[in-house]
Length: 613
Ligand SMILES: CC/C=C\C/C=C\C[C@@H](O)/C=C/C=C/C=C\[C@@H](O)CCCC(=O)O
Ligand SMILES: [Zn+2]
Image 1 (spheres, rainbow, N blue to C red):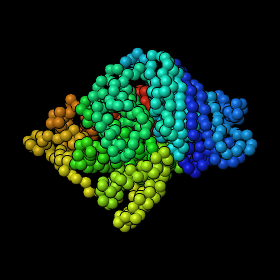
Image 2 (image 1 turned 90 degrees about the horizontal axis):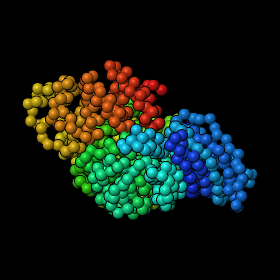
Image 3 (image 1 turned 135 degrees about the vertical axis):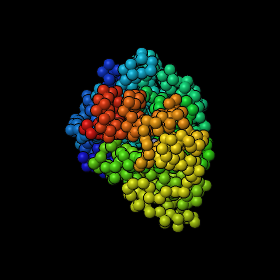
Image 4 (image 1 turned 120 degrees about the vertical axis):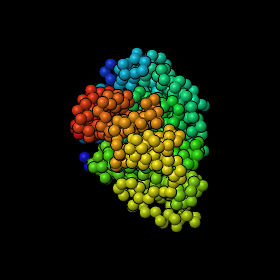
């Protein structure tokens, strides 16, 4: 496919020539046809004189009309749509009148989305908890906003938006914005902070809310909303901790929406309204760190944004770094270090499996010239990125030195889109007149940004909590069932995160002695796993059952794979099943049966994982 433009390999739009300042959206939600119908009115700023055309990104969009609005009159615009490029979409060319000058330009596009738009998911009532009403939601990151509206679908461009959404009056519509006005069947929104297109989000369903704190509510279907309020009761504390670290919270509202189980990610940092997977509902708040992660994005990602997805680590590495600091302030420094170390186990697994055949995608800064962002997505930007920041923090003198820099960096680049060199420049600039500047001379940027595999340097972490899990993994991998049954070591109390990490480490052991039905049963009995509602525990246990080749437990593995379509869980499960000849046909059959209930990003990547595409 090559690079689509010089600023962003994944977008046709030309932000150096023209940029969107504001978008007015008007949508009519058609649940029957599973389509959004309506218009976007883009207020552009033209940056170059005699611009001949505006290039926008679209994907399976049916454009009805394009109109130039000037001085009270409406001029029809000629437009063309290019052939689709797989994983990327199409180019919409809007021809401009000769001699178009620099300055403001308003263009309205009337259109409708495809019934299978890649950024939208439509659920019938049966797929909801309440079973009475349909549900619809979006997931635009990385480049699916173009399937929802014609736009400059690049994080290099930030714009404010307002929206009028017409929907069935018994349903609630929410967006990544503030609610401006509510009428029956018609909701008005405004987002006054400029955002990239990937942060435009919408959800409509039979939703109710509970208060979490000042300007903070949790939304969900009635059946689970109280459990959600309990699970995420620490949200206000997390928000306060995050703004102590990062600066004032500019988005005015912080709501959570607990999504249907087919939501493909753990969370999505849609401004004013984080989307989270219901797989966080463990019953003991133990997975609420994902909320800390999404809160951190209010600064890292949503205020300071990667200019294109090759620099995604600037969004995610910084966010994991801030997330772990929030966890550290709430639960202590040992827990912070333990989480960083556990992340490294997850990274190791990802390199060994998902990325085994594509070492170039294990770099911190990747080349997306010939790869759609969805195919490049992995733990690397998250974990290698946050490890790099921790390395820099330690090198420069620890949190007391680095946290003021972090605040300065966030202030300097707030409302902007940046690349890795901008971060590097800010770092050198901040420390240039201090005794730390020699330390910065020690950083091998080439190595950190371009090396493949694990981070080139692992910082020194407190290992006290991790040693327990390391020891347990070693015992369970080297001892027989009879030896373990007699051992007292394995019965010591461990935290839920230690349990998750120990199971993850066990999965990473090359050899596991006597991994059979009896060993799995002993594992389940020792740690009470049968009763666990924790999705991270269930996921790892299922992977061990697959590794033990317990064919009679295949039903429960398939049941887990069908219980949610969070890619973090279902992709490795399908990959594992595909490598087990006896189970593969059943896995493929099951996938083909349920794939229409998955979001496109999920079904397409699993199709590739299973070798069906
Ligand atoms: C180097 C990678 C280049 C580009 C990838 C960018 C976006 C990929 C696209 O697939 C969207 C990702 C959206 C992620 C949203 C939330 C994640 O933080 C969730 C992490 C996994 C999970 O917890 O389920
Ligand atoms: Zn994130």
